[in-house]
Image (cartoon, rainbow over all chains, first blue to last red):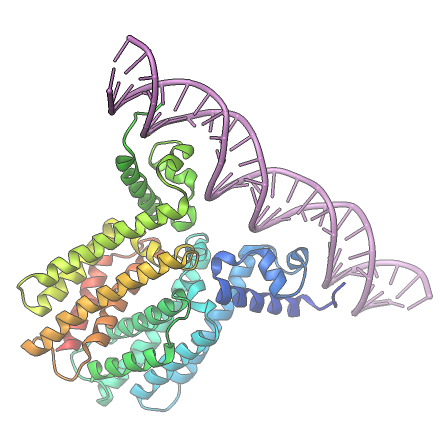
Length: 196
Length: 196
DNA sequence: CATTATTGTGACCAATCATTCACAATAATG
DNA sequence: CATTATTGTGAATGATTGGTCACAATAATG
């Protein structure tokens, strides 16, 4: 029998194991069995710490949301120039995805987005938060002269998020075949050119 | 017993039924049973016309690829101004997605992209084709003065594709809750502003 | 019109999945 | 140390899924 740990600990382990499974084999491979294997525990023990698969989804969404938004909000609250903030957020997001390929896969997974309305709403809300944050920075950037006049902060923010998402998702879906960092650098440089 | 039709016809019906199922309930709901129901035939009859589910995936990819790329290539070959070509491609893509919400869901589905290497490569190739086409138009646009100097055609094309993809995918994943056309118009206008 | 090829169908099967449960081991409590 | 609460586990279960098969109905062919 395995060591006994508190549910608190076990829940974290399970969430991390789940994210690992998604990163390695995709959401489609996220079964109780594969999670159990990755977390080195029995399937039935997972039910000791989570009500069911849906609860694990919620915990995953919470973890990812905190990881992504927490960082972005911290950078946004800093005192650097707007364009530097944007750049830092951009690359920290890419780095996070690089370390956790499961993130984009999870966020854009149908199982999650279409299978559970409450969860879909939560993710949707988080994404809007993210856009708001980016738009705020861009607005400040226009005022300070980092970016040019006449552009829409909100649409420019959506464009940036679109770049981040399509880059991460393509990378995660293509089996991580290309170097996401170099790819990100090229597209960021061009975005910055477009913006000013 | 149902009317007898040639496999040729049946295959088309099955592909359309499958795309319909995905548009209504997602790739996760794409089972032989739901396809059979949507196509109004028995499950076993589907195996009469397709070797298996994977073959249906391939047929779907072919159909979608033709629908998306065919239109884009035709527009690109036309004689309008580059920025008009880009705009027409953009909105025709959005319109296509509006009519077939299954398209973005299918393209970014894990079941497809991670479950079948050959299929993933085919889709990847198509997407690169699409980027090439857009990049070609943008390059011409820079030469003709539609767009400004100093921007990268390829990265700008990726940015546009990113916009298209994230808009369509968000819309399809959010249960089609917002008006994709108005959303697309706003973001297109801003993209054009950024580009010139 | 008789024969053959093609298409349609219900019954069936093995695999996979999420979940439950009775029971065992360990930790916490008084 | 005795009792109780918590955590771990193997076996079992019902539902769903992709796929097969023998057989039936229809169309094509000579």
